[in-house]
Image 1 (cartoon, one colour):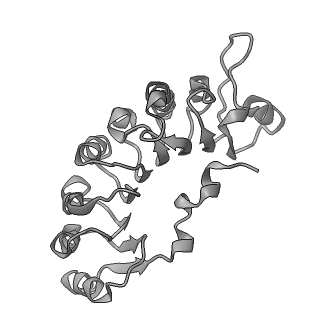
Image 2 (cartoon, helix red, strand yellow; image 1 turned 90 degrees about the vertical axis):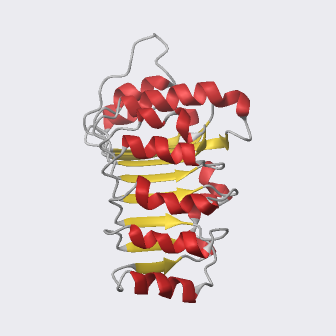
Length: 240
């Protein structure tokens, strides 16, 4: 389907579609390179509906967003195939600067394939571990914008390692729930951080004020309403 769209829309730069409509060429040939496409969003990815051949179409991508249908905890039997697909797409996207992965396999299983060119990263993967975070940090030393969400699990004390792992951050989106105050306040160590967005219900105005004071009001703290946390809406993995 993507190949057909691009053939009739040769200047197409952005596309969002369900992965179930993408399938390898039946004659066994690979997809032709698509030089115009700069942004691709794949929704509803399943282990059997995500051909790795799509990676050969997207070598010029700047933005890739992948929404898996299931988490690795919900469908552990699909892990190996999902990892192969995702690693292939990432390895073919040498110019990638913006990456989003929602659900899918554990981050550490594909972290080594994340291009070092990525400066904007969103990871909404349950059970996110310190090992996962360290593996990502090794790949993206110049990361500037990070949205990290382990919901329904929690980062907790791992939050204190963010300044060490991602020292160049300018913006950060996290959940504050289950993060002890002393660990939360260590975010002041992010010397270039300009905006901190709290994704869950934030009623800790005193704590946020403390953090702003510690940064001499350099840091802006934004609290999100539940409606803005779109990645956890059931419609994320549905295409109507």
